[in-house]
Image (tube, rainbow, N blue to C red; front, side):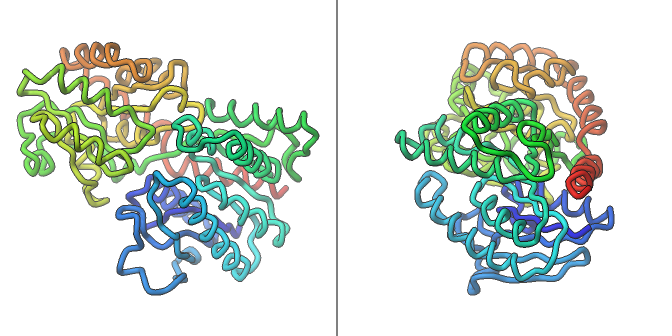
Length: 421
């Protein structure tokens, strides 16, 4: 089967979580003898500018053993400037769509969102090729931008929601990461159908086109390691109890909870809070963390260092602001579980992440943005180190059973086969 995949990031642009996800999916699909063309951006995520090694040309094409990768200029902008970012993604989409039309016939077209604009380019190409379109939704836009106040104005929000609905309507299948997201998208499709719009071509119209396919983690690369490693030595953490947030330091996360906990544990020299990552909220985090001796703000490490970084923590944090679980699934949880570490999640009650943690006893889940509940759960977890170790072991076992790239590639392959039948 020949597959054409649109995505915003791809190896070596792996500081973006979606770059890691799509790279692993492509490799797993290639193992199943599929030929693949990837249309993506030139590497730019870490510094929000095109890596100097890749600059100088508006696009590049490279051959691989499984197909080809076409990289286009991403028009990088600050993540907090939504209008500029939308224009940038629009420019990238236009170039990507034009180049994709030169790549020949493909049996299935898939686009990863965000950015949602890639769905438009993928639809135009799929229509030209008479191929089914799969719209892969990592985060649901514009919901997150609206919840965070980054997208304002009734007319602007309404226009964004109409655009979202139009892509759902044109896609033959929509994949999401959780049942929370599935309910969100199905509700919107039902509303859109009541307004008189039709569904896709090959999947049945309506909610039948929504499929839950979880993200995954490379269990060979990320595995349980000794805590007292080079990362701890490098940052003066040997002998400490490390409570870590690792990932995007963005506007969707409640870092105020770490601040409150750091104040609560200020008199305990054994406990250190580590925020490992970069993003739109990092400057603000650094401002309040700078005078606190028990908080460390650390840059992203290299990709090969990720297993060591995850393994350095005694306890990991997942922090998602209230109301966002229906639109965003924190995929960092998968790496935490693969590393054999327990998790404390501040996330909407009843969400899939909250339910999985509680059902399988992988840590604790507390209501979002609730400082008292967060600190109380943290106190209970740190009081019993044997409990933490057991939770981490259960997390690794859960990941081994459910979160392998090969299993998810098989799920996508089954979907592609159904669309082509």
